[in-house]
Every structure is written in structure tokens, then in C-alpha cells.
Image (cartoon, rainbow, N blue to C red; front, side, top):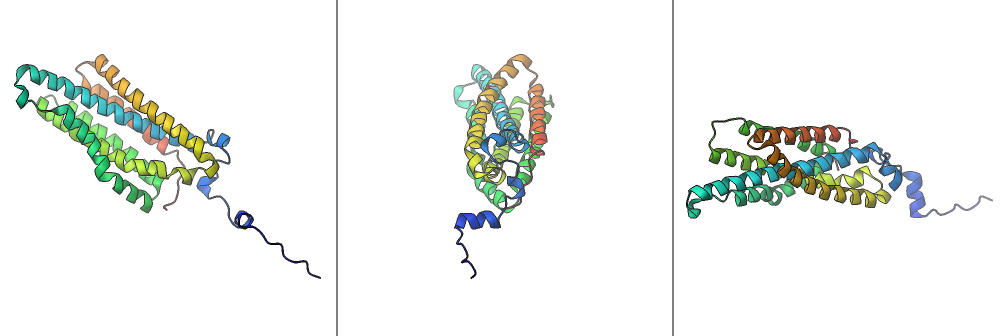
Length: 238
């Protein structure tokens, strides 16, 4: 007599019929995740990106505050340009306008491709800021306007970067590893915000009127972030 075929549960059939995708084979548990190259390269990439965003934003804001204070001493308050408010709006508005575009791109092409492209664009954006600060013939109004434009580009790049930053997590890490990975991402993001803001103030105190040095620092940070993003494992498009 032929023995009856044993019924398999859905989870058993899934376990026999499927295997982890290549991007999920980098980790097997929460402990191994924290030691993997995939985790550390991603963590460094997003930390350096958040650090540079806040470093450059704070540098521009402090420069605008200084310019506004100088203007108020020599002109009527009603004719003074609200540089600080304009700079804050220029950085925040792209998140409203372009976050949807970032989600669209992350759903159409590889999220790691989006991340690497955004990091490479970051180098060019802060490079524009350096070029602006290296032109001595520009007036204060022109310089501040150009820096605010660069700040808006930084906000745009971050808005496009963010959906892929969070969307790539379940594609890189196993489901049982997502909690510690998300915790590490949140912790390092807040640290990057704090350190980036503080370091901008310290840098401006040290370099005084040589603002171009702060842009060189931003370029170095962007280059390091791009290098770490190249170490991330590639994930296919959704």
C-alpha cells in the first residue's frame, strides 16, 4: 500500500520552494546584521548624508543671520531682506514638492541606484556652493541668493533620497532584522542632525570669513558618503 501523502503547511511549502534573494543573504539574524558590510555601508551612507544636510543648512543659515544683522544696522528694518526665513523655506519646500518623485523613482529603478545617484549629485551640489564662495566679486545679495539656491538643491536631493533610504531596508535585511536596523538608522539620524548643526557653528567660528573652507569640508563628507554607498549590495528594481 502506498502511504498517504503528508499535507504540508503553507510555511513549510514556502520554505521548500523559495530561497532568500541575493540581497537578503548578507544577514541571517539581528546579530549578524550589525556585523555585515551591507549594514555598515548603508548606515555610514545615511549618517553622512544627514550630517551634510544639516551642516550645510546651518552654515547657510548662520551666514544669513550675520548678513541680516549687518543689514539692520545700516538700513531701515522695513527694507531688510528676511534671508534666514527664505533659506529655511528653500530647504523645506523641496520635501513637499519632490518626495513623491523620490518614491516614484524608488519604485521604478533600483533603490541602490537612486541612493548612489543622489550621493554623487550631492558632491556636485556642494561643489556649486564652493564655486559661489570662491568668486570674490559677487555682492552679498548675490552670494546669499546663490547659497540659498544651493540649499534648495540640497533639499531636493534629500527629498529624492529619503524614500529609497527607507524603502531599501526590507530588500537588504531579513524581516527579523528590521527592528534593530531601523533603531540604528533612527539613532544615527538624530546624531547626524545634532553633530551637523553643532559642527557648522564651530567651523564658522574657526574659519571666520573664509566660508569656502566650510564648503570644502562639505565636499569631503559628500565624497565619503558616495564611497560608502558604492559598498552597498545592489538590489533589483521593484
